[in-house]
Amino acid sequence: MGHRMSPERSQSGLAIYPGSFDPVTNGHLDLITRGAKIFDRMIVAVAQNLDKDPLFALKERVEMLEAVTYEMRNVEVDVFDGLLMDYARAKGARAVLRGIRAVSDYEYELQMAMMNRKIEPDIETVFMLPAEAYSFLSSRLVRELARLGGTERLKDLVPAVVEQHLRAKVG
Ligand code: PNS
Image 1: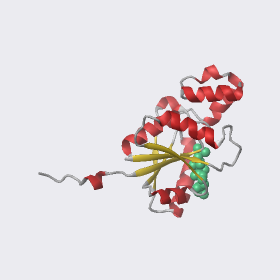
Image 2: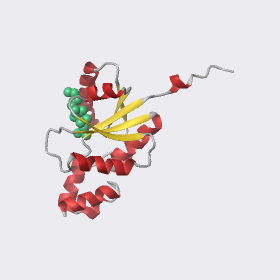
Image 3: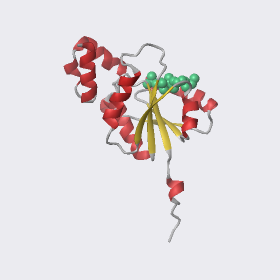
């Protein structure tokens, strides 16, 4: 007999993993896998409104994410519009998950996390580190590499389904 926590107290609840996912990379997938081990449930939330035109339409970004998370039983894919924290609150999330690769990510992430805390103080931003192999990887560089360097160079950087979509897109 001991002081075991009740199952309820040991639960880490729902986390939202938001982003543009234009397109999802192996770095995102690494983070989703890590997050899914920590949280009971995760929603990968694709932002509908981006500052600039995405390469992939919302529907395609969602389809690729659904394909790569298909076997993860506690991971769902959804879209959101407007403020992330309004969406997270409506879903009953306890945390927002973000990945930090290098120090250069930190300043932007700090600003966003602090703004989000001001909007919704009860939802924590949780930062996780991707595997070292992906610490240089970004959707922006993947798009550039596909456009200028050829899609055969994308192996190991994006899932196969994303490689196919990129090939279809950039030729
Ligand atoms: O993958 P990204 O582009 O780094 O994701 C950024 C994203 C979509 C998570 C962020 O821009 C966002 O949350 N946008 C929704 C609007 C919002 O809530 N902004 C932060 C508070 S002003």
